[in-house]
Length: 323
Image 1 (cartoon, rainbow, N blue to C red):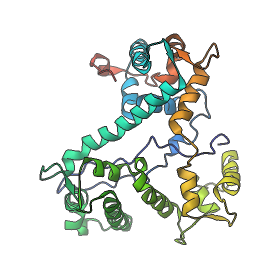
Image 2 (cartoon, rainbow, N blue to C red):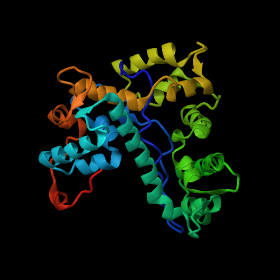
Image 3 (cartoon, rainbow, N blue to C red):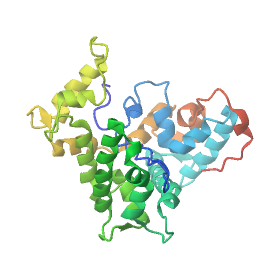
Image 4 (cartoon, helix red, strand yellow):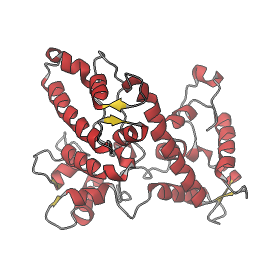
């Protein structure tokens, strides 16, 4: 964890369950930004999951996992041609950064398109709060006796007002009916400036277990590490305690308030796409001219798109659309 001092990735956004009216709802992931899988993004040079998802997008990375090495290299070659905007035969850090931002934006809007039909119940090309509430919580509201488990009851009672608060924050014109852009802000608040306060507030609520309106060091650590066996803490946990003291608790009062949480999860001086682009260039730039040729990228294809799959199955015969 020593190299992780800036922020958690924005690449992994909220994924809502596609619940329809009268279907028993499944609780969606509560946290907006924090993805434990990405905490040690570049710690292990042999693990390229973060790089794949940044370069391809999460869904497309899964598609590449079904390809043979030859197919992956072939598709990567075509992608490189698209990244090279000025067709000069070299990929700069800026070109890679622009591509990564494009992939991120595409993922967000594709995610909204996938679930839109499940919520726009009257097909008026808007999603009202009532439509969303009915699609997501209708079964729970109509059949509370089936949710006798205390954990389920607590979760639904917590998430319903939380969703309503977020929906109203995304609803800029206040008509309680979200158009595409407003619904995108609701599902992916981390992408919209006017939703940043909601992101901070939800993060605080998730970590602040004693309800005092702050996050202390133990709550900060408990959010990422469960000390179940009673043994010594791993080195990375001790490092995170130092991070809390040195970089999270800015006013040194032993806890984080909302401003400090905002600085932690959304630092103003850190660009995730640029950091990832620089990382890819640094790891693949064989002649150290600070730019990449197609051959340099193909020589390091595993970092960009390499498959983790060992069983390809029927998917090898499918036609995969080019990015």
